[in-house]
Image (cartoon, rainbow, N blue to C red):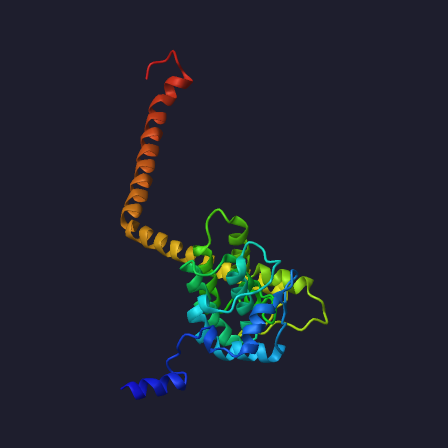
Length: 276
């Protein structure tokens, strides 16, 4: 049994956590010296960039299980996030080079860590907005079911007092962030990657699709209410017919009575002094 488990681990069927001791010295140096640009993107230092990215994208599932053991940054200019969190941000930035569907796998695991408060908010925000290869990836793929699920979970896990963050995620979930991107992006900029079945739409096409969806949903609701109304009216139909018939009969009888009284009183009205 132990031999079978060992073979499964070696072939990646059962991934095991990867700590700093399992990494080549060049990758450790990459974590220690690499930095994130303030405007987005990653500056890989201490190791060849392709080597660093390839190592992380091939081993991310093992590394994500043991983030506490990532090599820490040796920078002296770090903000309040601290060396450990900075390494987590470096790891996330490198994971953006994953293939599209595998990146969604990463996002699902990433948001689970956020729900358990094991990674900082900045790490989730970076993954959603995309600071390297997945810039606006989540935004333009907002119609994908797994992406929607990830966004809803992030919204639920974000504190209520962080209204700016919640608003951004809701704008992403609604598709409005994608519209904003498509309106403002440079014509020569390469488009973000898309998941199977997802096509980039012009903003007016997105709006038209939402209007049609709303109209269809609203029409279905109105049809249901009309059907209920018809059913209710059909149930009251016999009583309604009887009521109308009775009203007509009363009108006719009243008319006959009035006509008789008029004939009886007509001579007195014309000749007040003459007895009938």
